[in-house]
Image 1 (spheres, rainbow, N blue to C red):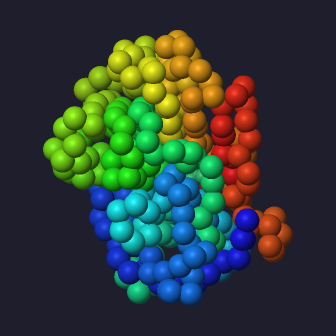
Image 2: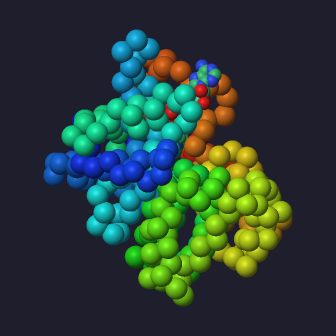
Length: 265
Ligand SMILES: Cc1cc2nc3c(=O)[nH]c(=O)nc-3n(C[C@H](O)[C@H](O)[C@H](O)COP(=O)(O)OP(=O)(O)OC[C@H]3O[C@@H](n4cnc5c(N)ncnc54)[C@H](O)[C@@H]3O)c2cc1C
């Protein structure tokens, strides 16, 4: 894997919700090959820091390589989060961000199957990339179960409505709003996912949501080799500055735990 950082210019900043922005990058011609990606992959961004030194953070690509969209990541603010704070507060059109080429294995081998996606909050980001790719370049049916705090915090809500209108026979979107139904626990997710139990499942979101989704899929007897997980948070202590220069690639190879594909930074 290429771990070099490249200085990329931000071509656009899109306000998605009150606390989420999409950053669109300009990719110069000479880097086009290096920044080719598969749906579901992520970029590693360097976050500068005058006193504490730089840190790195991973952000999944929300754009699809199959729809001629420019390379885009979507960042949701984490309260008191160093990386997301800087990206949402300090980055403007024309800013330069240091970025590693795409990495990650939360990506389907083929876009032609039927998919079940379970996403919560910013976990929609890699899911959106795969979902758009499957609709544009695949031939199967796609179901999305998407959990959020309330209507205002739904990232890509309008885009999903548009895609559902464009693909009424292929795309099913089921929203779960915590404000109306409480936390999305395994029993509720299981009921929503049951009609799609024969599909490959892709799960991304905060840890409690992922745990609930895994329980729901296991209860529906979805085989573990058809259950794919992307975890946004490393287990263990809260992140600090990079331990040493050059050690700033969190993009490690995924590993398998109980047959589940995990990408752990
Ligand atoms: C593969 C992958 C893909 C990802 N994709 C996305 C994506 O598409 N969109 C997205 O928004 N995020 C994504 N993330 C998450 C992202 O990388 C960051 O983890 C997230 O933005 C939080 O980083 P931060 O620097 O803002 O917060 P951090 O500074 O890491 O802080 C996180 C939390 O920990 C607390 N904390 C920090 N330091 C300490 C400390 N010393 N002691 C106690 N508490 C502390 C903070 O208060 C905060 O609440 C992804 C992560 C991975 C691994």
